[in-house]
Image 1 (cartoon, rainbow, N blue to C red):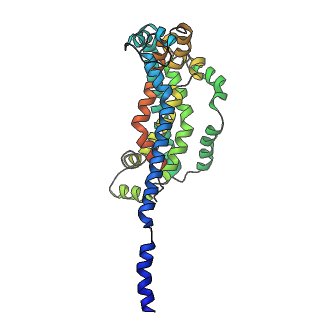
Image 2 (tube, one colour; image 1 turned 90 degrees about the horizontal axis):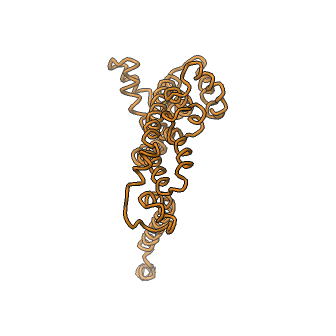
Length: 297
C-alpha cells in the first residue's frame, strides 16, 4: 500500500501539465485582447474629433479636394477668422459667463437645500424632497412661457443674468437629488465630534460636510456644465441681442454665414468643443470616485 502511494505521487506529478502558468498565460492573453479592443474603440470614437482638428488648420480648398488628407501647411488663419470675423470671441465669453454662473449658483443652492433634507428631521421634509424630485420627472422646457413673462416683468429678458438664473433653477433638482444621497452616507459621528469641538452649524457644514461630498459636487458640476454649454433652447428664446448670444446660437448663425468655408466652420466647432474636453479631462477622476463611492463598504 505504501509502495503504491509512493509510486503514484511521482507519476501524478509527471502527468500534471502545470495548470497554474497556463491559467496565468490565458489571463494575460484576455487582458491583452481587452486592451486592444478598448484602444481600437477609442480610436474609432476619437476619429471625428481628430478629423475636426486636422480640418481646422487646412484651407477650405484642400478639404474640398481631399477631405481625409493631411494639411500641406498648418495655418491658424481659420481660427483667427472664426474668432474675430465670425464673432466667436463674443459668443465664447457669453457662454463662459452664463454657464459658469448658472452652474455655480445652482450647485451652491443645491448644497444648501440638500444638507438639511438629508441630515435634519424636518416637518414636511419628505414632501419637499418629492417636490425637488418632480423637477427631474418633468422637463423644464414646459415652463418656458411663465419663465418668459417672469423675466420680462423683472426686466431680465434679453440679459445674461436672466439666463443665469434660469440655468441655476433648472439644475437644482438634479443637484439636490445627488447631494442628498451623498450627505446621507456621511456618519453622524462626524457632526457630533465637530459639535463637541465647538463648531457651529455653518462651520460644520462648510468645513466638515462639504469636503466629504466633493465627488458629488464634481459630478453635479460636470453633468450641469455640458448640457448648459450646449443648450440652444433657452438662449434662442430668451435672448435677442447679438452681444448676448451664446455659442449654440452663434453657431447656428455662423453656419449660415460660412457654410461654404469649411475650414472656418471646423475651427469654430473646435473652439466650441474645447471647454467640454477640458472639463472631462480635469474632472474625470472625481466623477469615477463619485460613481464608485460605497462599493468597498
